[in-house]
Length: 242
Image 1 (cartoon, helix red, strand yellow):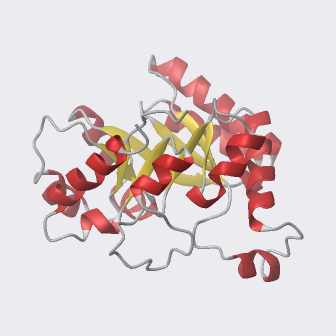
Image 2: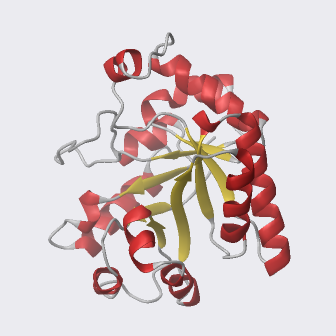
């Protein structure tokens, strides 16, 4: 059974002004979870995360750390102090890196007196095609088997869940288990183009497959009416698989 996690808005904008302009469209009482990625974080720094937390939003800080274990632990210690809800590493960084990432989050959160964020490992990016996996990453495994192998590695190393395409969820839940977070990007309404995503699904398809939470970017932030777009997708997500 899937967890009733949030529909996370991926705010891939370049400035604080764009972010403020976007969130001001919503009722302040709307409990939004906002994903901050590299572009905004590198442009505005940690203060943009603290400002959102102070305003009452939940934050998914998506920096996809991938470095030697000690460096990742130190970076995650700083993230752990912030009070964000989710953060990410690349599963391809290996078991020791993931273990050290989790340790850093726990240390930072303990020092700050906040709840540690859930550590999510990126398996294969939703932009990666089976052809790219075979020819560019030189993987001998098919996509589903590769994602399952990385998810097992992440779980055994202390991660709380994975970022994964909905297309691999059936195999993941069978091989890795139900009591693990499966957070799915690449979510699109039926009438929305795939853009640079190659493995996509609708909110209903993701819910039926067993997603724990969704990540939606351009279908909401590029909509003529982002509030209505968000509410429509949220309604579909909450009403699916009941």
